[in-house]
Length: 402
Image 1 (spheres, rainbow, N blue to C red):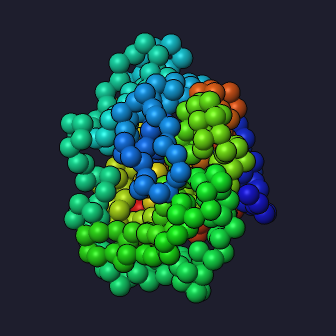
Image 2: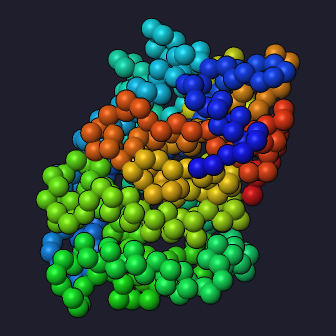
């Protein structure tokens, strides 16, 4: 990722683990943090992960129920939470010895998100008990899916225009043609020596338009490629033996390259700001409240354990882009988080910067977090104190409103 001018200054400010940011006119201190985090490593969400014929051999088995956080995934979340904990202690957001009290943890109602929040709490505050807000497991929570739950209706025409703009000239067919070499590479992993009747590239890609209460959906080759790419990434990140990752035909380089399909799906359907703001309309008020509350008992650290869609929605609203080692550009990483840091000056003025923090593909596979990716990302359309990409708090809150 490239930054220029004041963008490089903003990026440089993120090289340390939180704390005080040195600006020319006065220091800013981080005093609130909100993380929008994707759940950790899981198996495919279905026992039969893809339709028959996509691959020539059965998909590898998992010891964990479909869609649930794996034991390996839990260890990886604990590790990255420990990394965060050190940064938060250095910034004065967590006590060094006592159990913290000003923490808010919110999770969606899936097992993988609840378990991710529990694992994060374990790494963030070892030996302590932290409350996690969530609905009963598997009871739908509209906070995490405002459009499909009917709480934030779309204007279908505006949604279609937003998707069309993301797809670009020539429509989805032209986009598929540009991805054809990568589709062929993926089919070689899925099919081995089989020449016909196998793979993802057999069905033309299409987009089902949004309705007032349903998000746009991708179908055909690019949709199936996105699903297959994510399954292969999860197999590798889980630490499965090489012979089980893509039937022994997928390398780490393949995993990285195929992630472009998954990232593309989110760029087209989840990141267009009009759609993103509506789908995030349940969580945006929580984020705004956590960043704005100066009460004596207000949470200093808040974490939302959600999904890749939620992370992509927030990235779309803020215009954020990242590149984690071993992961495709802008692909939401299991356990990765957009971290929103509120910085304050001596006069009580507040600012917000965005950071993306995630384990690399290698660290996910090892379930470690020794040197995670942590990069300050300029927020689109913001400039404060002479720094492009830094928002005043009022400007940031305005971005969260649909």
